[in-house]
Image (cartoon, rainbow, N blue to C red; front, top):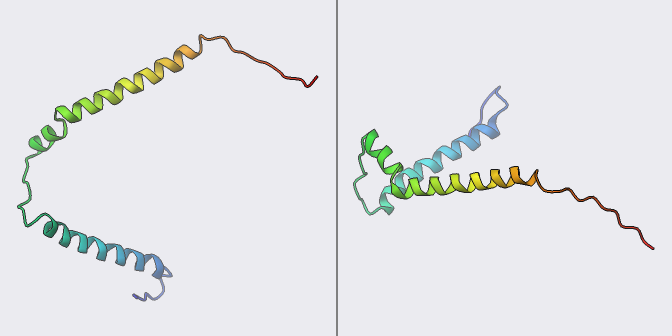
Amino acid sequence: MVKTEGTGNSRSENRVSRSVAWLAWIGFLVPLAAGGAEPLKLSLRDAVTRALSDGTAARIAAEQVEASRARSGQARSALLPEVVGEVQDA
């Protein structure tokens, strides 16, 4: 455990130290899990092209269609009659 003097933040600093240690281990283990494969080097243009590929563009478009349908349903609901009622025990 790391002790700090005068800061009063030893708990948060300890948490940060542990987080950094875990990230270092993950950074070490991930390439091992990949079987030693070389990292894929992309230019910015290639990365954007991959991000906006057909599959991604289709998913984004589908989400936009769904959002439009939800907004139109909300707008149409204002045109429906409002029913107010009360039930009394006889």
